[in-house]
Image 1 (tube, rainbow, N blue to C red):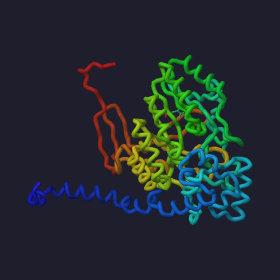
Image 2 (image 1 turned 90 degrees about the vertical axis):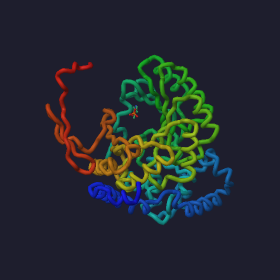
Image 3 (image 1 turned 60 degrees about the vertical axis):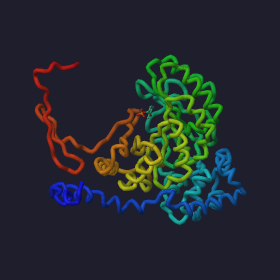
Length: 420
Ligand SMILES: *Cc1c(COP(=O)(O)O)cnc(C)c1O
């Protein structure tokens, strides 16, 4: 277009473009204040050096997930050396740990900002006094009641989950399965896996199997290889999914060897669990990219958490950062009313406001589905701001993302036969 022509641009188009630009100014301003782990690399590197010194660890140790797992912080004394804890904090951590244990990988601990009491990494990983409050249920989803054989939860016709371990790189303070985390790490017994596989073999309608836990990638390479191999031999299992927070809390787990194993069993999907832009680091990015490079599609299942991510701009930024690492935002879960997690609960209106702030303002690629889990095991239920204002025999009326109203006809012509 010549400059002469540009000058003649229809004023209505100009006004429209200006209006569009005005709807993103708030995000452009907020975005730079929301820090990722990339923005804070210098501080993180300093803290990492301190932690490594304390453990007399080499870089090779740090990069080895076995080392990370073995050196998870699991006691108040260990924790105190890494982050400041008041006397009250210390008592609280001890009291809570007796009921719901904690364990934080040195890597994830290095992301905690000691200067910020509301650090989203700290909130997710360090026990708080509030976990002793009596609100909520230990098993609000009645997983125990949806289990046809040990280790399996089946709530839907064509897919199910196998819980393969109770171990994680870090025990989230809002965990929905905290009742299963127990006192010690253990993978499920081989007999349980054998039973689960037999159940799937007997049920032709199961076309999608999810391995979860705990964290499914806590199994050793050999154990995973064996289990995936057996699953792949079941013809009606079309896709396999792995649920793992290791790209976030223990990215060292995503080794080239592991990726080679997973690659053999495609179509295989990995769903991970980033909750905060602060979790986006060079290490987590490399972990996601290794999986994506191997042709493994990645999804993200965020949990909406008070103090961590219950702000529209934080979620938008997180989702943009995820897409840059080839992770597709898949779900936002409304936090379940699990015992001892009430400090994380938010109102449904906050989730709806977040959904409203995404549609139209950013690409559909960055928009996950907001899900409320039906209590008692009634399943995932989507929740959406209301865009349909009226639906009748003749027409339907909508509002668009900006609040403009439009209508479409809602009838078929009588001279067309219904194709059903
Ligand atoms: C979440 C879940 C699934 C998977 O649901 P999708 O919507 O397919 O991702 C399957 N089984 C159980 C028991 C679940 O809780």
